[in-house]
Amino acid sequence: MILLEAKSLTPLVVVGVYLALLLAFAMLAKRLLKTSSSDYFVASRSIGPFLLLMSVFGTTMTAFALVGSSGKSFVKGIGVYGLMASASGIIHSAVFFLVGIKLWAIGKRHNFVTQIQFFRHRFDSSGIGYLLFPMLVGLVIPYLLLGLVGAGTVVRGITTGMFPDTFGGELIAATGKMAFVGAVPPWITGLVVCGVVLAYIIAGGVRAAAMANAAQTIVFMSVGLLAFYLIADALGGVEKASEQVLQNRPELLSRIKTIGKLEFLTYMLVPLSVGMFPHLFQHWLTAKSAKTFRVTVIAHPIFIMIVWVPCVLIGVWAAADPRITLPAGKENAVLAKTVGVLLKDPFITGLLMSGILAAIMSSLDSQFVCLGTIFTHDIVIHAKGEDHYTDKQKIMLGRMFILFIVAVTYTLSLFPPDSIFDLAVWCFSGFSSLFPLVFAALYWRRVTRAGAFASILVAAGTWIYFFYQGLIKPSFAAVKPAVKEDYLVMGMMPVAVMFAASALVLIVVSLMTQPPPKSVVDSFFDDRKA
Amino acid sequence: MSSTAPRKRGVGLLCWGFIVILAIVHFDFWAWSDTSLLAGFMPTGLFYQAMISLLAGIGWALVVKFAWPDRIEAWADEPLADDNASDGDGASE
Image (cartoon, rainbow over all chains, first blue to last red; front, side, top):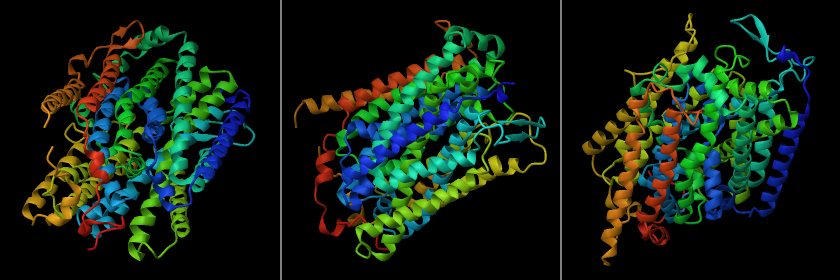
């Protein structure tokens, strides 16, 4: 009967107030915005350490971190933390240090605004941009999708029962029963979230995104800790909650039946994706100096711990609580369901919902801005020339492309995947398979244009093959397994094969082809003696 | 060259070594089937991995302190030779 209880509209009012405050904040950013396209696209390279930390962290923590991690832990247990969170604490910071700082310096030397500009100059090839552009956009779209699907799932879970006369809910095929009766449907949430994010990035570009990210990161971290405290309290305390897991679902406290050792080992390659995220590249370029990165490199693993440990615990606690039940394949809804079932104060529920939306929107904004930027610079300006358009026209072109991408992503979000976590891992794996390219471009003079092209094509080909085998084909299978297993290749994550193939081809083809001209390569390497 | 430079480089390498060790011990295969709780509520496997995150923060602080690329900002500000100068747009192919 929980689903049909009359519910207060207060949570939605709280969310409405939060979104209004966010928009007001964006208007403030607009007042601070300079009129140049440099400020719109890279915030005039003036972002300081605190804002960089918050914007980079806010950008990397999306629905995947809150909704996906709790949902995956609900099914797989505590091992999820080791799969992604602790590995990311090591790998992300390593990438910020080894790749981010160097790209910042190169970006400043060459006045680059986008990742594709870097690759075009590094390999003296216009074509590499046209090859990378669809691939990067194609991989960012599933990432955007995570945000919209996550937002829709959370709002639907929490608002269940609010509008029983307006929204009929969803028919669950396996049980023949209606679920989420009276809930705000995901298509409405998607429209609102897109509208708000678009409003503030169109107003202020990457500076508004960075400022909104910082504010939203503070909101979602604070609210996440509050949610953890309140949920633990509602379960009778942390000891009782964990004791319940030990009694009802002990397998979730270990990894013996849930995660393979080779799977765990090869998951370590997934976080390398941050080295090729185009939106993160753009955030790196906004830094005022190399020293700006220091706080981000140090604090990132600790911030990940602060967000992920509570989410993973909430996931396993929920799995062991008989009051929290979900239809098979709906584990994305576990956080919302837990909040809905255990927390009765509608104001607090509204705060939590705002916090979750903050985490999601703080990623969407950077991704939207970035796609507008790469389209404007790497396709339009590259084809027509720097002086063909005025600054205002460049910004307008960026905004139009953002609107197009939002429309595509919104349409795709109407057909949501079962697991946000799994979709995220596929998306990250694609970016990881391109990591050998950026690493070689920064540290190996001998890498050639042909090697780069071959590596990109192999990364794309292997990703498409495994994505089809692992996600698309099973979706259309006549008989679906009751419990969906992770798609593995000889016990390994597909990313291991994709990464190895891409790296191998890069090296072999580069060694088989003529070295790049010294005049092209020299400006990318610091040859001064220490 | 000052005599502190090689020493700093040595300490920097040690700090990187610490990060590499963390990456290795992150694979806690020996605790794969452990279902015990620490302090009555914290799953041991989760606590271990959370400590990896905490130690990573400390490790990165050491790397930043002792292995920071001091010269990179000066390099970033150096003017490019004319034939390498870029308007940031794209390559010429």
